[in-house]
Length: 169
Ligand code: V0V
Ligand code: CO
Image (cartoon, rainbow, N blue to C red; front, side, top):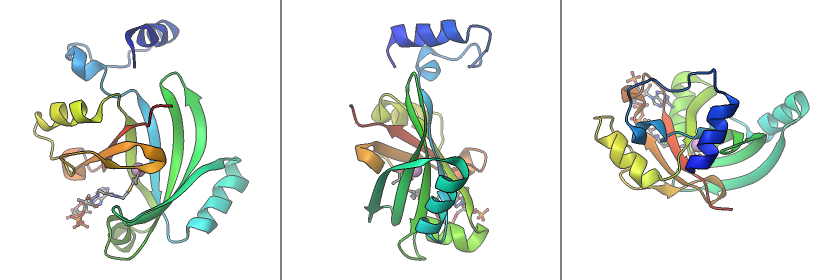
């Protein structure tokens, strides 16, 4: 996010402390939004129908991502100053995939949180330097042309965390 935009957001939410004081400038600007909440499910079509009829969300993208072992859909939730946010519904391509294993162990539910970043390579370098294990040393192809990378859930309080650099519009 550029400096002017952040100033604008800061002015809009002037009374809401959004970041811990004392962090470096790099840490302050690292996460720009919640890009998506990833939800594991057994039947993608059934869950899309549920989210459409219950919340009125619209599917804006569908993809099969062989590398990540998923068939997925992005449903648009809202637009914010730093970009859009989505629900990502994930069906595994087979049981021996991250989402397939998760379903066996834990059943359907929240699988990961995807945070927006301006520069995923810089974010990986910075976060890697803190000792958090990177599941991806380099960014991979994500939904809608984004560059994505995952952080190990065991080092992020049990939350599988994804960094998302959206494709420039
Ligand atoms: C596993 N664990 C999780 C978890 N998955 N904890 C929180 N949230 C999750 N989603 C825990 C699990 O309970 C174990 O803890 C431990 O981590 C090791 O898990 P495991 O079942 O033995 O499985 P692993 O080690 O084979 O794989 C786990 C990791 C794997 C997280 C390393 O799933 C991974 O690399 N994920 C990143 C890629 C991914 O998830 N892709 C699908 C989304 P205990 O039981 O030992 O305590 S693709 C996507 O989002 C896209 C394309 C996009 O947004 O564009
Ligand atoms: Co995701």
